[in-house]
Each structure stands twice: as C-alpha cells, then as structure tokens.
Image (cartoon, rainbow over all chains, first blue to last red; front, side):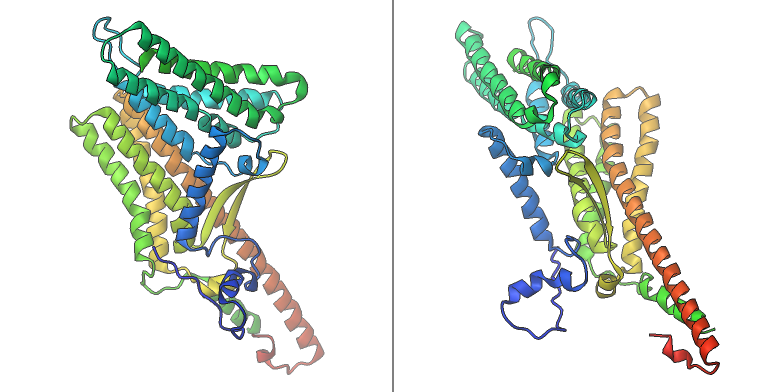
Length: 217
Length: 205
C-alpha cells in the first residue's frame, strides 16, 4: 500500500527536503490534516498508541493526552484472550461448564458500557468511548493473572489446596491492580461528592471478571 | 451565457474523473478483502460444523481489521474522505468528518472506478449482514446473532461515517458553488451595466 507523498515542485528545492515534504499539506491551504499521510505512518501511529496505553496500565500514572486519543484495540484483544481461555474449561465432575465464549464477550462489553453510562449519568466529564477504552485496557492485569492461573492449572493437573490459594492470590493481585489503574485514569473525571457512586460499579465490574477468572480458569 | 460557461467549468473541475483507472489497486484489494471474507466465513461456518468459537474469533478479527482499514486508509486513498473522533480537554467528544478541499482534490483526483468500488464495497456488506440478522433472529441462533450484531455495528459505523463525510462535503461544495455563481452573476451584471461590450473572457479564469 505504498502511497508516495507528492512534493510540490512549485517552490525551488532548498533546505531540508524532508521538511518540504512535511509542509506539503500546508501549501495546499489545509491545516492539520492526515488525508495525505503515508499508510505506514498510520499503522505505526496506532500501534504505538496501543503499546503506550498498555505500558500505562502496567505502571499507572496520569496522562490526559493519552486518555484523549482512545482506541478499542486493547479491549478487543484482551476480551478475545479472556473469552478464549475461559470458554475451554469444562468441569466434568459437576457437569457445570465455564461461561460460553459469547457470554464473556457480552459481560465485558455490556458491563463496560453500563459502568460508563453510570459515570456519565453521575455527571462525569469524560466521553463514552474514552471510558470504555480505559475500562477495557484496565482488564490487562486480570488477563495476565488469568494467564498465570491457566499455566499453573496446566502444570499441576490435579486440584490441590496450594493451587486454589495460588489462583486466589493471582486473581486478587490482578483485581487490585485493575482497580488501581482504572481509578488513576478515571478518578479525576468524576465530581468530588459522587466519586464513590462512580467507583463502586467499577469495582463491581472488575469483581465479576475476577470471579470468572478465579473460578473458571 | 458567460456565467453558464464558468459554472460548467467549476462543476467539471471537481467531478470524479471519468477515466476507468484504478491507481490504488492494493487499497481496493484491502478495502474488499476483509469484509468479503468475513461474510464468506460467516456463511461457510453456518453451513459446516466448524466450531463457534473459532469462527467467531476469525470473523471478529476480520471485521476489526476491515474497520480499521476502511476507516483509516482506504477511505482517504480512494475517495479522499475521512472521519474520526476528537476528544476535547473537558471530555466532550466531537466527530470530525473530513473531505478533500478543492485545492488538493486537483492534485489527488477521485477516480470513477475507485469511487464505485469504494461505495459498493461500503454499502453492500452491511445490507447483507442486515439480512443475516433476520435469518439469525428467526432461526433463534442467538450465538450467531452476537456475531451479526458486531458485524453490523462495525460495518454500519463506517457506512455512517462516510455518508456523513460525503454529505458534509457535498454541502460545502454546494455552498461554495452558489457563492461563486452569485459572485459571478454580480460581476457580470456589474460589467454589463458598466460597459455593454465587456469581454466574456475577463470573468472566466
């Protein structure tokens, strides 16, 4: 998909050529536009944005610029991993199975949507997709915990007390981390008096996910 | 007579070129490949005994790849339109519907064939998914309904975004045209009032 940028030859070539190419839009009278950007730049920019968001979840710190350009790639990837790892488990003895793939999917997206709706109704100044984006990306610690649990279960095939304890520890660490990360990003967007009302559903949302991770993985 | 000429010139300048050329074959390919294969996989998996989860994941990944490609790449390459979301400082989100300005449209013209491929590829898949919606709904296939709903959301968002881009741009060009025609009419009236034998070429550019 090579889209070569056209450099206008109206002006005599002088100075740095790369700069001229970058300014080609402005000569057209278009201010900040990305219509003529090479495809490689578009891909790299989005990949970089996704990677940066993951790094901000691993080490939560406030960044309003990062919060502003939302994307749903991270939530999608995490949701697929989660649903995929959870659905395969079937408990032969009790007859009860894990949640279905589609169910996990619906829980994650509808859950994130409802939590966001709640925070909007409370008067939080954050846009719908921003909030869904943050809630989705903050599933990352839980997904990591689930991968750990999954590996441990695969390594130790029979149920033991240590296994249960290990799973609980992994999950609660992941749960705490998810809550902490999401509150770091979303905490400021709520009016001061109603913070608890907005935080409670977030905790509940991650609790349901953590419960699924702890019990079914 | 004079104004008629200039108006025609103005219109033809910004119309899609009638040449049947495709200068972005790769963009055309990627515009169609993901959405068509998502539909094919859906239809194929409905008939065969392929696992639900596997086909769900495949269709979902194809659809999201298509969403990204159409939204970010093929739209601006093939028809010079783009839409995106911008979030302001206070958390208000604004949707930006962008189209090429006449100046850069001259440099990157929209070709008829490419525009046809783009719009047909944009409109037909959501229509087909909509039909699938009914077949899944009345067949009580609620698992597959989830797939169809995701497909409709992703394909529909792109369709909506580009239709908004198109109408906004058409409105802009329309208002520009009326402004221009108005100015030309005013000019020609002035010139005809001032000097009866004014050269018509003075108002054309």
